[in-house]
Image (cartoon, rainbow, N blue to C red; front, side, top):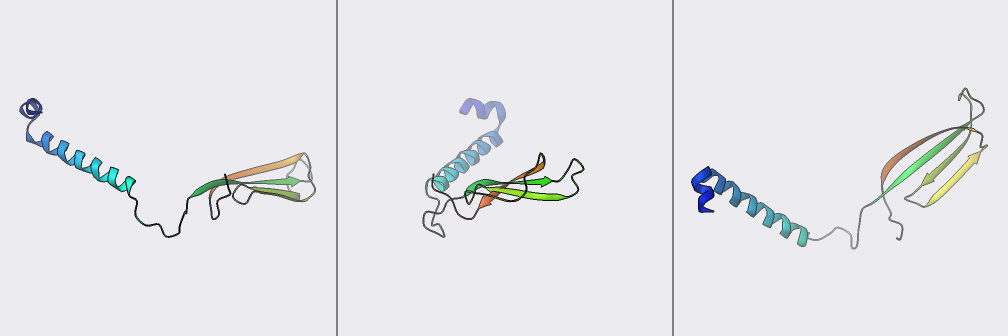
Length: 100
């Protein structure tokens, strides 16, 4: 350590000490996160995929729809399913976590 101080000066030593203290603080924070607002709460992520079905290749008249919701574990369809489909998918944070 003394060799590093001789070569790079006092500022490197201070930066090293500050970085070491920061790592100790981070480790303590991760080890003891404090009280949680709800017992056993965890954050869950899922997707919601929506498929919209159309009457023909112009995709102008919707005739059916399916929605898959990973958060609730549901897949619900209504209307008519055709070969003309467009899907959208988005990630969400779930309100309730399903059992793993």
